Length: 158
Image (cartoon, rainbow, N blue to C red):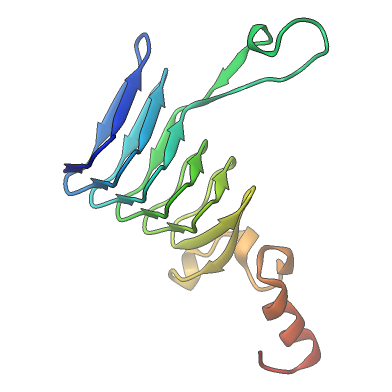
C-alpha cells in the first residue's frame, strides 16, 4: 500500500477500514468512517479524493442542519478500481470500475463501469455481456452517453 502526502483516515466509534494490498492513495485523500469502508486490492485514488460512509440529512427548516441527523451506510470498493482526482465517494463501487475526475458517487456503481458526473452515472460498460447490469443495457438508453444513443437512433456513427 502507498499512502502519499496528506492522507488522512478518520475512524469514529466502532468504524472499521480495510484496504487491500497494492492500493495507492495519492496526495490529500481523506477517508471518514463510522460504520465500515472496505477497499479491494490494487485500487488507485487520485488527488483530493473523499470517501465517506455517511451524509447529512438536511431534512427540515427547524434547527441547525448539524442537528438534523446523519445517515450511514457501509461502503465497499471492489478490486482494481480507479478513482480520479477530486471525487467524492458516498456509495459502493463495483470491481474494475473507473470513476472520472470531479464525480460524486452517491448511489452504487456496478462492476466494469465508467461513471462520471455529479451525481455520477454510468456512461460506459466494458465487462462481460452476461454480467451487464440492466441499467447499462443498450435498451436502457438513459444510462448511455447521449451521443451514442443519438447515433444509434439516426443510424450514424459519431
